[in-house]
Image: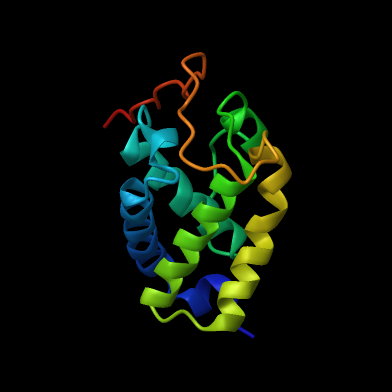
Length: 142
């Protein structure tokens, strides 16, 4: 049986999904406030590698763990749910079959306790001023 990575269409397909998903999140007023200081290029690279690795692909996620990444963001349960809704909408747009969607969400779902800090249905909460983004990525030298 093919890996989830292969059934999703490989890295190019994951990149296309991540591009759409990030744009969808940016337009979603329920959650976009949490991304106001985010390096979008970095976010996309990290998401591609994270999904690629989780799905059995050849990538290696080298970002911070989810608890460290989201510590101090004040992410609510409602915001987490909204983000998942945006991901599902993107997967539907790309006609990803339900079995693959469920498998992918099953791989990502266990991260919830490391991301959600407030068990509240509230959405649209601001990013706390004290939150510290990831340090800049090292630029590879030619």
